[in-house]
Image (cartoon, rainbow, N blue to C red):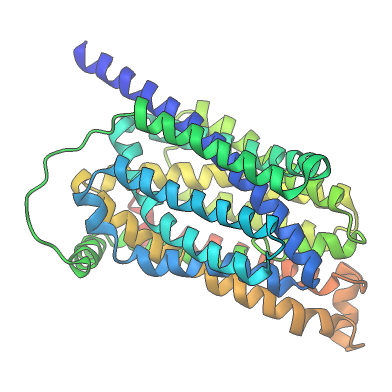
Length: 430
């Protein structure tokens, strides 16, 4: 009975953490949406949008290799508080530059790099904290809650950002972002206690954490193969959705930011539906199949329909189809990881996981921007025979090159996802 009460109290603390962090993420998401529109308006280049994400992911991936042992040996709450504070300083810096009339695209690149550094510490610390607060049998449901809140933010942040931008401009959005940080900071500081098991007083270098994380994965080949296949899936998805979707929609809708907001909102709505289902459903028996079949369906009905679509209705339908399966991927993967990785190693393994699984994202982002501006867009108006054939599917107007990229990622992502289902080591993880 006493253990049950402790679990209920821990779950209540996690709900407070979840709600407060969701508010903070909402503020950051509104700022991110406004800055993408601002940067694209300055340059009219998909590459400029790609570089914003690239500068965020590169330091995140590189540092993820080295922070694992640090996170396991230090207070998770303190790491999260400090990381969030530095990220808030980034938003404050953007606001100051904007008010001074000195904000430039390269300023955002630098600030995004700083935020990427903080995320390398904050995200694995948050993942370990979740494992400490949430009973293992509730991990899948909590993943559904996270998917619900994250996608609710995707739905409302573009609309709120557009309304607030019209009302008070970018400074108002940045001020709300900072206020949301203060709320989340105080909630974590005063109301959340994250259990910290006793650690041995041993001296360790960052390279020790890397070695220990990889040593665990060497013995757990199924988890390693799952991370590698998810890295490839992330690469294909980030070639398009992370940086190409917004320029493509703006190009194919004559710069209509309302259409872009609707498509983003529909993408969030699909994730909300998926998150709600995951948060209330029973745990999947065939977890690995659920992961890869969900990914395959996302590529098949998301990317391919997004490529062929010519208006907001089709793009919105594709957005729902692409995002609805994502919570099933995350929930089943998290359930496997929390059960297979010992608590004392979670920081190191999660950090290495972030480096492996998300290490392909920067390459996908920067390659996607390059291919859009310098390969696919020029190719689709070149009069080439293959371009004419592709044009029957994606059209030959502005943005058709980026639509052709969605066509390619849909086929490649679907193929990789389905092949991964049959990997022997991965199948053993069920």
